[in-house]
Image (cartoon, rainbow, N blue to C red):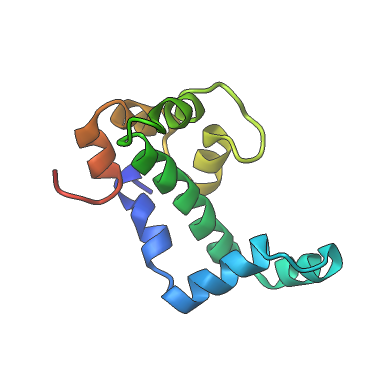
Length: 116
C-alpha cells in the first residue's frame, strides 16, 4: 500500500461506523464492557482508527502550537504500540517515506490526499 492511500483507510468508513468504532475503543463505559466491545471491532475498523492517528499528527504539523509535539512523534525512534513505526507496520506503509514526506507542507498534503 502506498503512503498516498493513508486517508483511504479513514474515509472508507461511514460516519456512523467511525463513530461506533471510536466509541467502542475510547468510550467511558466500564472496562469489562469496553473489552467486550473491543472484541466486536473488525481489524479494518482498527486500521482506520490508527490511520486517523497518523492523519491527525500530519494535520498538527501545520499548526504552530502543535507542530513540535507532532513532529517529535513522527520522527521518534520508538517501536512500541502507538508509535509511528508500529502504525506503519500495521498499515503496510513505508516508515521512511512517511517521515520524508512529513518534513514539508507539500509532502504532508500529499499524504493526506490533498492537492497542494
